Length: 176
Image (cartoon, rainbow, N blue to C red; front, side, top):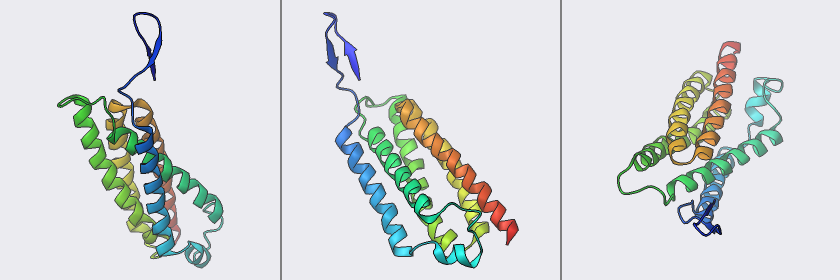
């Protein structure tokens, strides 16, 4: 972000997020999502056993899609967590830490969703977990929007994706 001085010259604002920390957090979260997928294995067994081929996109497309989401969410976390605009005690500081608590719960539950859906095929538990994830994403997005608007928008877009996942989990629950 740039802002103008009295003399009319542009200068870089010091109260912006730390880009390096944001990219590192994105990479760490991407690595965590990759580790969960590596440990649990691919979704081919569940897709084949339950004939989920028409209900879900291809495995390659899902891998790219979720990798991009995890990286973006990690970057958002880094941008908010390493924000220098939050004062000692302010509305932004409270929103930053409360949103981070929601975000951390959301990520842990998101890492639990994958093995429950693709390995255990527990669609009822996945539907409940997706609903809780959607609520946590909305809460984190609203708090993150108080710190950075773009961060809030990204997390709220993730909440929309989770809402679609919740609907798909409910459809699969009643299908099987």
